Length: 218
Length: 218
DNA sequence: ACAAAAGTGTTACATCTACACCCATGG
DNA sequence: CCATGGGTGTAGATGTAACACTTTTGT
Image (cartoon, rainbow over all chains, first blue to last red; front, side, top):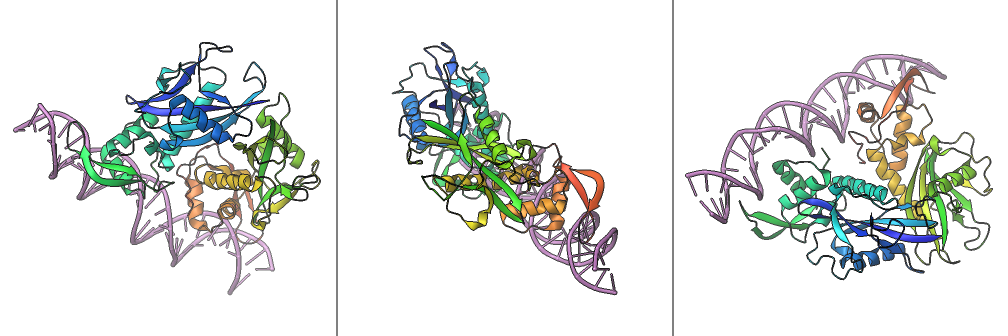
């Protein structure tokens, strides 16, 4: 029995939700897209293995965004080479200024979710589960901030919700909801910036782990 | 590397939340309580392995209640015998009329959560995660009905919430909330029964998978 | 009749939606 | 000045909490 970890790495680039995929260089599924992942080392915790893969693939620290176990997949036929059970992890990351530098997977690239790439193994199912988890968690946790840089405007936070949920939200009501939710975000007090229009306040992540009241998906 | 499944089986008996535990007959942790579980067979899906264990331990069909994957635990030192990774499953079951008949674990018994038994391995952590998952899911899914028999009264459903959440709920408001939530429960139309007081309408599970509006934990 | 549990009505308050409106900046 | 986006005010709909009150049984 072989144990691996696979990563569903989500970020928002160019206003669309993207996932990090790698092109497989060897059979099976040679040449197809797949989720990044790798073997769990002897005497390595599962979370450590996933964090190690994350660093290898993106050069990014897990603490920069959000990182959690998603689910485990072990259907007997899921890998034609034999019994491989994989523990999937989900990470929500800000748009990386230093992108896939230091990656050991040369073929890794951010692909829009909307592209609908065919994926190797049961990775389409894992990705779908990760997306649904992310969409659900935006409702009742402050995880949307994981997609944002350390300081962000409320409009930027709103585009996170709009992108992940594929909806439009009323800017006025959204503003009041997020500023009203306890410890969701805190004003940096610091200045304000933006290209056109009135400058916006900057905020950072608050201390809340649960949103109250929640932001319900329309 | 060894792969096992462990089960967090929850039910409500005698008005308290209980978990099925087994006394370990062999080292390590001989004589201590542990979650029921066992090895995943070669070419057996994880869910099948967990369902098989459930039937072996309780003689109950997974479809009688609710059954889902909880999380996977693989810290290197969690089993002193070597590397053992376990996939934990959570099941919510009605109070079983035919109890642990046919069980291959003679030492299996329902133990109150409140008893605070010391558990072998990292099973205390797994149980805590299962409890928190169950508590959270009662809020926004109709899973409370998994603890109920096929036909139940609203008061019985309310005691499920009160028991799992360790709170008291207003019977009048609770009644309106659950009858108002779309497709949560359907009246059997059928009669009404109970020991003292006015007879109650009987209900069965509805078709909803998500509760709207949700029942928020006080 | 009375206790006990089921179920309805009412009122005050919180939250949501939709939208009118004002504020601050770049060109 | 005016277009653009940031941010506040307000009214109606919906949901919530607290609790008085009516209904239907067993004893």
